[in-house]
Each structure stands twice: as structure tokens, then as C-alpha cells.
Image 1: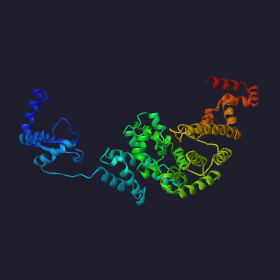
Image 2: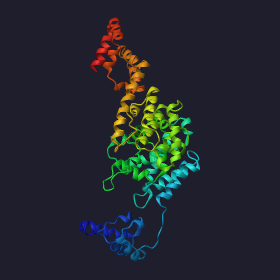
Image 3: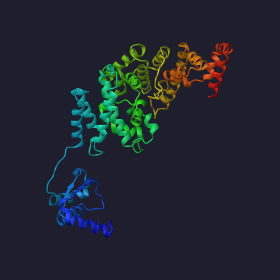
Image 4: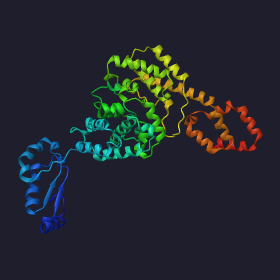
Length: 451
């Protein structure tokens, strides 16, 4: 105190403590963060001799004794009991977190087994160990609040599936921790973030600083089976962390494209993604099932495309028995049976660009991803034309039906990805008749082109 306070201020404090010390309580928090240049022995001596004896104050010291540096630990053993008259041991954040999960979410949202999985999620995470940051209860409460807010807006048919509940909570837990720990400090990169694929980090150099994606994988996924099983990042959910607004319908659609209606442990896509955890026979069995799903019409096109991309990745790495010809046949089948992707979310990720798939260390897969993306966008144009969407859009322009144009842009955001003048050229004869028959349409068209 002598080093940091002016004499007048110091004298004023001492005078007040001399007169009122018995009614003063000092609370000293985070004792384990004591500067290395300060002796714990001297610090405890100051508390004993000055605060307790000279001024008759009360002192409460709060901290994690296990985290006190090795240099101070010996001093703590020798002098702690001489200063501290009473010890109160509080439960760890992890124990409190378990109680919060049980009290807030059991019965109303999750059954007993699911609660145990959530406890495993927060327990296995390095966030909960003494080697890293302790589980942050404020973050956990934020996750629970957001979970309830989003879950209560979901359609009842989605609430029935364990995948939906577990994926929503698991994803929010990891995303909030990534955001609050500034693992990715760029907002746009955070919004585009996907669940990291551990397979891509197998051969990464140990002496090289890990990328943010690899750091996220090591911290939240590497030893956490619940995270591997259920975590699913979509642009909608990532954006919710920053904006607080979520397109519920689009998010539900993405969830359905990522999980089948079965339990995650039996889900084909999950097993293919985590093939290292299963026997060769199990993976081969799911390989056959994956082919049937791609060729069948029961699942959404998005889910079938996700399975196909995973098969392609495993095929190039020699994990599955499919050969290149069989993979090409599956690709042809997917393209021939393409379904128009209707989306009512401007912020929604574009399935056609395959942004769900990230292959940072595989140039061959990156090249293939770009080629398939171009083929998918070509199919999109064909189906847009077949269903008359381009023609509807042109008519809305010529009639200056701004509401209709807006609806089409919202439902089929891909309409903005095409060269509208090329589309006009395809329908030029029809457009000429419209313009010749009504001068007002020339004005409307001129306004559109000008804008």
C-alpha cells in the first residue's frame, strides 16, 4: 500500500480503519493468481499482522488451492494455518454444472440417459479439467437459456427425436465456448465454421502450430464422443450466437439433412464420419446401406448428398471397398435425381456450394468438391427452368410485382446466382410480345435494369 498510495490517502484509510476496522471485511479473490514476484508468505503476513491484528478487520480469501504455483505451495503449507482460522470448501464448477443440468433440463427436456450424456459432454471437455479453464457456469447458463428458447420454437415432430435435442444443446455448448474464448476472432469465419473432421488432422506436423480448426478439434472433440456424435454447426446457428435471431425452419431442415430419424449411433452418416471407432465389418455394412440410401427416395436430397460426399472421401483414402467407377455411378444417380432446393432463408448456407465439406489437407478432394458444386449448380438451373421459376421471375419484373419478386428471391435464393440477362435472352420472344403489347412494361423493365 505504501508503494501505491499518496500519504494523505494512506493516512485517511488508516484513520478510518483505526476507528471502524471491526466493521470492515476485505474479500480477496483469485488468490491463485498472485503475482510470481510477490511472496505468499509476505502476503499472508500482511493479512495477519496488519489487517487482522492492527485494524481488527475480517478477511475472506477465495481461490483454488490446487492451482497455486509450486513456489508458493511450500509457503502455503507452512503459513496458511497460522493465518486462516476457518476453511470452507465449495463444490467445483463441474459439480455445480451437473446439478444445474439435472434441475433445469431433466424431465421437461431430457430423459435420465440424455442428462448423463450432457454431463459427459461437459465433464470430458478439457474445459472441465484443472489443466485448462474451469467449466464456466455463466457460459453453461447461457447455453441452457438459448437451448430452451430455440427448442420451444421447434415443431413437435422435431422435438420427438433425441438427435434434435442433443445436437442443439451440444452445438450451443461448443459454439458459445469457442466464441467466449476467442478461438476464432473473425466473425465471418465463425459464421462459416463447420464441425472439424478429425480425419484431416491425422498427419498434421506436431511441431507446427495447430490451425484454429485443429485446436477446436483437439479441445472439444478429440476425446469427447458426445460432441462427435451430436455436434452440428450450421450458418444459421453460428449466426445466432452473434445476432440472437435464428431461422427455425432452415435450421430444422439442416438438422434433418445431417441426421436420419434413427439414434445417432446407428446413423449411417455418423458411422461413416467416425469410421475409426468401428470394426471393418461394421463400416462395410453401413457402406452398403449408404449406397441404398443414395439410390432411394426416402431421405432428403441434402442427407443423401452428405452421405455421398463422405463415401467419396473414404473411397479416395482407401477406407471403403467402392471403386472409382462405382463412385461415379452414384454421382450420376444423384445428379439425375436432383431435387430443387427451396430455401426461405437469405442467410442460409448454399447446399450447392458444398460448404459443409472442408478438406484443408487434400487438394484432390478440394478440386472434386469444386467440380461437383458446378455440376449441382448446372442441375439447379435446369430444374429452375423446368418448374418455370425463371419465367415467373421475368413476369414479376415486367409487371413490377415487387412482392412476387421478393418471394421468389426468398424461396429460391439461387435465382440471384444466375446471369439474369442470359435468362432474358432465353425468353426474348415472349418478352418482346409483352413489351409490344404494353408500354408500361417497357418502363418497368427499364427501372429493373437501371437498378
